[in-house]
Image 1: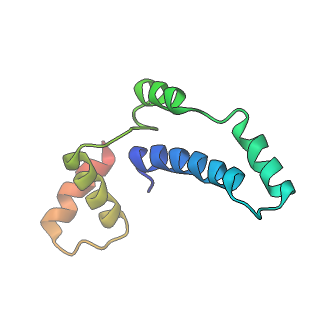
Image 2 (image 1 turned 180 degrees about the horizontal axis):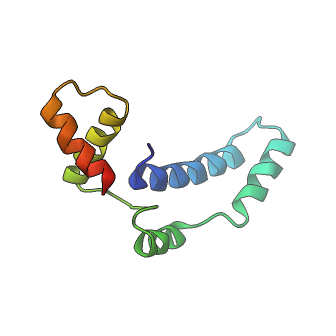
Image 3 (image 1 turned 90 degrees about the horizontal axis):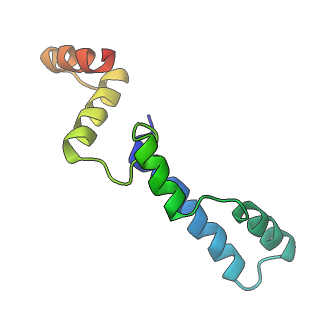
Length: 97
């Protein structure tokens, strides 16, 4: 399960990676051209902030610790890694909402 803040960070880190390719010597021209092409219409920080505001369930710059804890617990329960029956019941209710 990918969380909204992880998705947000992945987009930002991908942009940094593509820019790094462009500034790294000894990278073949074809690869640099492809990276430049990908960056041409790539969302900038402003676009990402607007996306986070418009769809916080998809993109979030940073999640609250409580929400991250609950989401991690729900993921663990979905994968049946939680042995405590009480915790399973609580997490089951969270997953259904």
